[in-house]
Length: 567
Image (cartoon, rainbow, N blue to C red; front, side, top):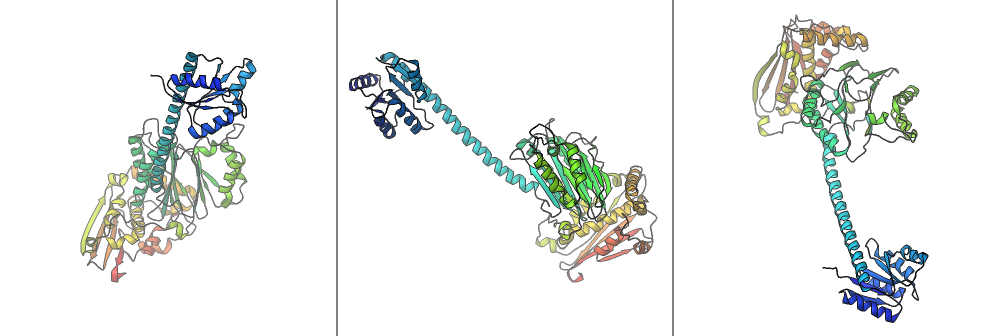
């Protein structure tokens, strides 16, 4: 059935006004009338009719001005205006449309044509109302999506930033193209005074790219806190991403394993632009991409080989995603690697390099083709930087404080020595003892040094003196891997003894190996060399433990940690 409307008729001729009102009323519409343009505007404001029939030529305010004012008052609402005119010149008819008219009808009025035009305008009104309704629905849905994304981002940020990104030796800039960043930056203090830093760049942008970052971050932080090695963390992340990501998605990444106390950097780069080790003496070593990104290879073919480099106090590490090199200017030129290297070559103050790269990008008028991440890690032994968070994996309860008296022993033979890492499992056991949790980082450091000493010097018969310079350092770790791969005999055993009456007690750790043994005291007396890259382990063990002793043959080293009245 045809639509029934409220219609305003603006006509200065009384006879024409009455005739037109009668015609429109007989067609079923509700009618209000005005004798001039000003009155028409006042009636529109008070009654808000759905359609206006407007005479072009009227006193006080003509139809053209009245039409403009009514359109202004209507705002986004469509109120069609049909001009009633005896004008025949084309220019005059054009004025009707330019003033806001939607159609016109010539006098004298044909009732059939008039009703057809009214119904056409009504259909146009309904179409616009549908469009506005859909617009409002889209706006509400969009706001709902934004609110959900913000909530998800708050959760994501808590997971992704759960580590030590706020450490004073880390500077970074990230510029996401969307609310979620396809680039992911993670950093965590690990046991034994180490720091792990991971920069990842997922394919794509926004929420899909960020979804893969959640399990990656959870795996990274969880395994770091439990003392897993960087190789194990990398393998687990790759396996998880391979399992959950669609085939077209992957994560280019660089993982840094920084051990400044031992002067060792281990770096793995799969698909990101070259990072750089910037030496305190001005040297620059690239951390090149040598592997496929994470999530591409399956477990059996994944290569977790790290590049091993010597580091010293004052060195810096620079990482970036491809968004840095792919920033482009108004001439569609890429910033590129050569411009980056030019900034690095011109730098005279290493502490200002990060700012100089940012300034160079800004001066280049870069626009990001991708998510952009730039990261600098300064290598310092500052106590705030090296502080390791407590591993409160297990809640304290009364049973943790009960008397305990137990001993357990783990022995690893060649197949396990090649593949297994006993330290996380051992720490999980020790962290069940509440008094030890506050010293989790120290215990891990000592345990890892004891294990590394037994494996590398006892079983593999490696000589730390080989690490006297950077080349020897690299040869040492190449030889370590070679001997470990070919190992067919030997063992390392770890014995843990705990004795406690609930308020006092001690932990004893004993590590034995199948090697020929050595003169521990002699090694302690001569081993420290500030310039050397090796020979620090025994000295560190003695400093950190409360008691350090060994068997006469030097095949078993023991340390003790006390609590309560023994402390």
